[in-house]
Image (tube, rainbow, N blue to C red; front, side, top):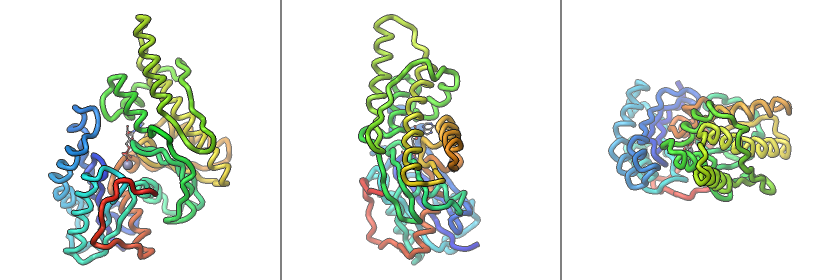
Length: 333
Ligand code: KG4
Ligand code: ZN
């Protein structure tokens, strides 16, 4: 076994620690989700998330080492997400990682959360050919990124308002499907007709996205039906909404791949776990002679293994962080 990195991820509502060897071998990937705690509030409550991370972090790190069959002394480096995310949540992971790195006298590696999502792909396919177009779709981001090489990114477009995952979560809330909304909408959509309602698609100039108009259109549709006393088929609403999101994501991603002449497209972030998006992108790419790769769902949503993979390439480049590292909630890619 080569370089063994302990990775820590606490940017939102998942307390996660993993041990990854050489950026590809996931020796452990412990994810303690706080979803049940936040569900009753209908979304993540930042202060509650920080307190939960504090309660869980030491146990999760210990569990990650135990499952990997390693002691602290076996580690070559410690990696942590230092942004973007909730500042109080990030601080718990950053403080824990600094303490371990200082105590063991091993390098500390700071990883951008979005970079982590992108690297979930390299965790499974380290030989992906550059340049790549990556669609990063999560609760906080909808970004099209040109990945020229390890650590070399160009942001091509992003959302001007809601992120794709945020749109799923907000629409799920009005449909009373609970939190998190993405998986709930995907499940319900399987029973619906995605052609039933013609929700608007926002095609902005260039490679930017906008999803707030679609969210409003869903709200107005429900309001209109209720005013007229018409029965609403929630499965049709879920399926038609999901189709509207997927259509725009796929069209813009293909446009980016054409513009930058990229034969390979990768998906990243929680919404990349969506089966409808995966299938639509794969089929469109196939028609255009391009290849699509996406990580297994467990590496799409927040997890520390993806952070351990991104950290490995930084370790190889000697891109290390000082022990004065701080959390940066608005960290750009
Ligand atoms: O990457 P992630 O775990 O956390 C952030 O960095 O935001 O993404 C969470 C987001 C949530 O908005 C959630 O509703 C969405 O990903 N999501 C999905 C699916 N699974 C998670 N959206 C659509 N379909 C899914 N299957
Ligand atoms: Zn994330």
